Length: 126
Image (cartoon, rainbow, N blue to C red; front, side, top):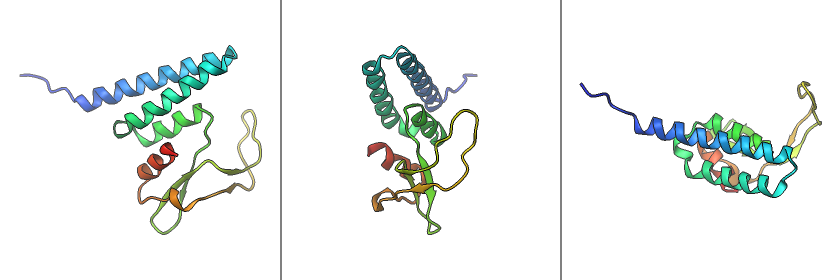
């Protein structure tokens, strides 16, 4: 009896592992104050997130973006549309504190999509 190998699962694991490795490398470059190398890795990570989009889970993509300095906000408009925006204002939070207070998010018409994945794709291509 032969065992079936889920190629998509292997591709997903490979893509995730490569992205995690790149994030760790980028963070080490930032720690060494090598901004140009870190910026190059950030572009590479973003391109890989776009290229492997269909293989990656939505939460993995969003969490990966936060390691690149993005602050994506997932929005729902009560009318069946999702959007992601990183533009807005909020109180500064440091250390282990949790955000409390008003958050103002700027929304543009083109960010809305019927699915969260669609909204993420729009955000990535921005």
